Image (cartoon, rainbow over all chains, first blue to last red; front, top):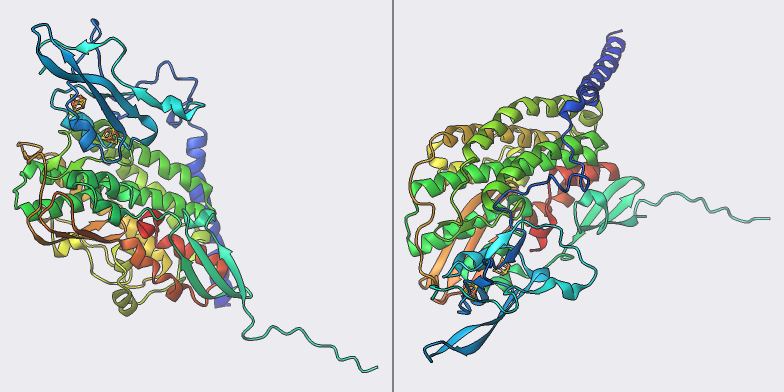
Length: 159
Length: 374
Ligand code: SF4
Ligand code: SF4
């Protein structure tokens, strides 16, 4: 007798525990206000990424097409996996002196691990992260970018 | 007509060998278990590892100390912040730099948030392993809130890269404190839901209570640490025994159970989330002022010698051992990763149980495969 009661008790308690779980799920089922899913990509226009989000490394240019990169190569040394390659050139400044300047700042997005060492160690703050996160392309070669825009120059006053 | 009919009686020694993994969803990664079965009973398990071996220890020998951080992120990716902290603490110990209280407190809060999100994912995937799909959505829903906090302050969601030798990469975001407080308030309400959905569930209890018991003696001799070890009564919390960062100034309990079965390994993690919330609550309102990073030399060189640091990740004890010959990169760097050691006990505790229980047992040890292989 005792064992039968015990057996029935277990069945009832078991079903009760299932019902309690179902209560939680059905609460969410019937209250759509609590739904947290975002409808991506439909909400692409209103989607704002947080300002520190590490999307990709970019080199901000001002409206006169000037950047701050001096071509010192510190970011290339600090990058742990060879994502950055600096090709520099020698230019002759207005007062006739020879000076090292950036020719191409090559950045291979496909290899970048977003460790932020380049952005952090750049002595002239020439690099920054953009919030772009849709990186998919059809050709791998498109991931190799040249960060300094064509025809751009070093900003005045940056050494 | 005397054809002898040979009866097909299963021989005692007749074993059936199957592969579980490397692509089995319940191994949570590329772990291959070669399981010897007799009927449905597990006789022997041979883990084959190395499918995601990247040679992190060897790679560390050729890069500088700040660069190592981005590799430790990728070991136990669910405890990324704590792994980074381990390396940073070792380097700071070697250079004898005094880091400010602010750094210590922020690191501790971040570590505990990391622990909570790791356990949330454990809960989510463990429920799914045992057939409760709902858990996965609920667990990830709450985990998303922590990842958003990480994203706002560190810029990364999972691989945060927030520590650097000498401090932190950036200061905390102005919203950080408020967001963490909101999260704690929210999660204190959400955690009982976890208990209602899974802990009390009769199917879950039947499948986990008494399965895969690990005794204290075995836990110690196999070196099983973390919540899995503590569920067997092994007091092994590095945060208590050798406090680092700000753990010496907070009150919290070491969650210890004596049963050591799958259910209590699960329970230990749920309780640890509560303890982590207690720790965060004690610290979040009084983050001391000060600098968030100590100025270090541009090229960090450790003096010649051997350096060692223990930390408690979400899965157990992580040890970092650096031998330096005075150069800018380590001569040898060794990680004692908790998952690799915990994997060793899997064969021992699942012998004699059914193959379906193996999923429950392996899930309760909470493996992260990249940490096993490194
Ligand atoms: S981006 Fe900065 S660190 Fe890199 S070459 Fe230019 S100035 Fe130097
Ligand atoms: S974020 Fe890291 S990996 Fe990427 S380019 Fe900068 S230093 Fe290299």
